[in-house]
Length: 218
Length: 218
DNA sequence: ATTAGTATGGAACATTGTTCTACAAGCCCA
DNA sequence: TGGGCTTGTAGAACAATGTTCCATACTAAT
Image (cartoon, rainbow over all chains, first blue to last red; front, top):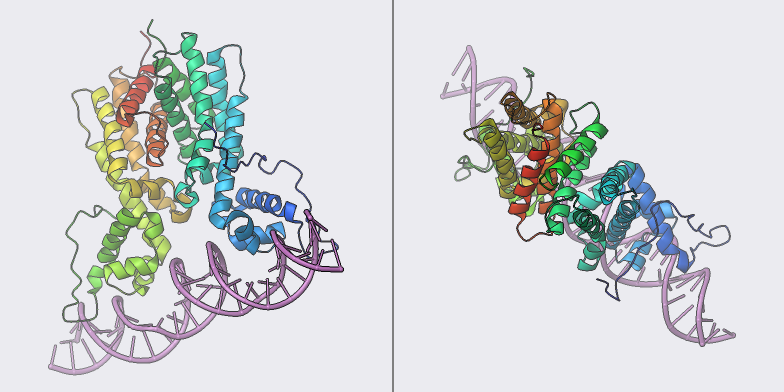
């Protein structure tokens, strides 16, 4: 559910035209621009150098603002990381939600593929979201917003169960099992623990096998 | 396969009686003890503080040796992390290998449970092995030794296929799918992304469902 | 035009990884 | 037992990073 006081970061990752720092005639960035140029710079450095590249000085330099800006706008590095974390999960949720198909089962399958596509398109964001959780240390609000992507998956599972395409009535448990498997597959693939010649095929086989195992008995 | 020149760390994690630093009468640690006390200290700090607790000065202090010891014995922090990484995978392989049961299928099931037991018994080691891979940056030899646990899983899958308890002939692909799912489940559980009331039951259900999906057609 | 908010530019401090240097302890071999 | 070699120790020093502080100045709102 929604909290009225939470901070929401809906801007897509490295997608919108970033506001240009108005530096041609002054030495200051417009107050209204500082937050966005820091986020844009952080996303760019995350893409290029991974979570390790996200230092306060590097992000500020890339953004063309003073390092103090990270403290003024985000209460420090931690707040910046949390903003990226939420952005990443919002992007993931949107990718999963936009999956389409003629049946609920087909949409679930498409969602699983969209999940993997997101991880492979944005591997460094994925690492920040799942491997640097201790460093990000997200607030309860950030975690709740992040897990809306799980809600999207639960809704898909519910639709499949309603169409008798998945067994059982515990849609949360089924969604958890599906998320576990697909998260595990993309995580291992991202760290190079992938021993088959066609990781995409292996992923697809695993999703199919799991969905067969979760189908109603016939 | 084996390389004759690789460094092997077979000592179990925080299990053996660590050699006591002979400090009562001297200010030096015995040369033969330095490596072990550093590894023991590193394991203890990893258990208590997680990967972030593994600083050169903290490990040396805990071990009662000079920080230079990490550079003399392990070529620096990186070598120490790699030793822990290999130790962790050796422990995991041994846990998976020691799973038993009356049939190949039962052994595979027990191996999946042993895998989760390892991750929950040593969550900080598991995080070092799978979430700090970039920082560990293991050598080819270390990676090869680490992935012997995957070989153990492949062997179990092969045995199941020979007993017609799992379908197909591509045991590597099937093993990859199983590892993906179980790794994903324990990883999400370790970072708190677990929305069911009984994670153990959800894990068991997922493994069962996947094995059903991977069983021969009947 | 004035005032309040806030961006900037370092400096400074603590922590961490790493190297360097000098000294000294201990081990091994003759 | 003694000598020589190996290696542990004790900081110092440097760079990088997170964070706070302070003074200055720019910008936005009234």
